[in-house]
Image (cartoon, rainbow over all chains, first blue to last red; front, side, top):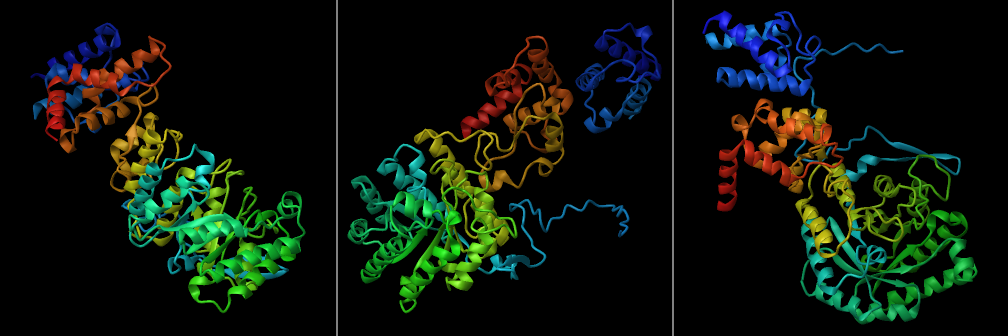
Length: 81
Length: 464
């Protein structure tokens, strides 16, 4: 899967889960501080990413990711492996 | 001021010599305790508990029964058997005492004695008069406790006697016991409110004189009864409330050895357990307890607390089977209909149940972070979480994984249980719920979201 495609899907899932439009989501956005994701919502986001890419991720590593850009990089790396 | 530098270690120091986890936490001492008595400094060595024969005596069937509806004979026999298993073959629960006044009391003594168990030994309890003493003789017991009240509240205001009259009467019953070959255990009632130098010490000195030439098994025993819970464990507390001073006077001024000294407390000031432990530390070998602390008014030292304390002091299990404590708690609640508070240490329903999300997170990472010792192995009570709006996704993850019996890599992640946690939060945020989520409701959620795992867990359960 192309890196650009992964980025688009991360943004699309983030927008859907957080009730926002995709164009409101920026690469540098912090999930909690900028997008208002509380701890449960952050877990739900990772769960939604897992579902989107049909993959199980390492819980501890995934929940360390704080930004949209961080999530894109995380899944790019994971999916390229 | 001495300056301390940070010790930035690469590996955690979990202080395993004190918190071994496979045992309750160890109690260590680093020196003698000093006490001022009659203007002079005396020392106690708390480390002596390692070598001394410290043990527990039980009064569940006597003082314990004074606060609950009477037990049936069958219940007494069942509890007696469990006490024996709990205390083990080393006799950590050394003795238990019975009333002898009713036919049922005496039948229970016979039934327990007929079990042929070595421990706990059966002793009696009587008022210090010759009529009551006949009951002990008839029952063929080797030892009996007898009420020898010490404070002027009892002697003057209750018994309407002078100190001399009271003392002579007590001594005459002890003499009768000796003549019958029965060991007397004098219960110094209300001793923490008595004139120690004016009555208690002279009386105990007379008692000791009375039995000094007797064989060891007939030498008088002394039970220090803190009838109203006035006893104080603090070093240098004044008499008559000071437990250390009382013990010192019994040993040093009356010649009562530690193996003939016992502490009996009451919980009127929330000091009951620590006062019992204090008595052990300062030189008494026996602490008298009741199961779950049931006893007159606010109760007695809880036997289960004393057991854990003894193990912590001795640094080993001493043959105690702590899991029987869990069985006894179930028995009391189901068969005797006795209420044990849900947060009661070691046996309450929720004693190791966390509701806090942050604690649940710790529990998921390492059980030892929020569990006092290996409660699964020692008490057959693994740590649990109760699910509320405060328990977090970690709490749900623990509950679901434990319910499904999943171990190691199989355990579901926070992401997998997020839908259940969302349902939980909706209950509180949308439905404005005020109660905890029940196990049945959680089970239904598991069935809904993990039907295959649910089926597998159910099959495993039915195959057991």
